[in-house]
Length: 102
Image (cartoon, rainbow, N blue to C red):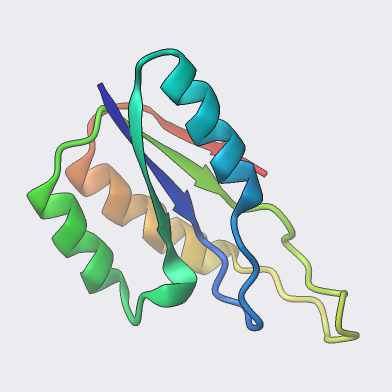
């Protein structure tokens, strides 16, 4: 069994997806392999689609925490339309569960 763990944040400066590291550790304890993908380092969703085309995943964990960005006194940013597009791409290639968390 293999899960894809996706950090959907595209903000800069890039912050590591620490929560996904914890999820990967728990999956490993259950003998489930995982791969972490950080979208901050991808130029487009086409790169993610290429990965999905060449790998089979039994499920996907997606983090969409911090829907607002106030740490650097910037205006609020709600990326839900881009998250919707991302989920559509994920569903196209993975027929297992897509688990969304923060």
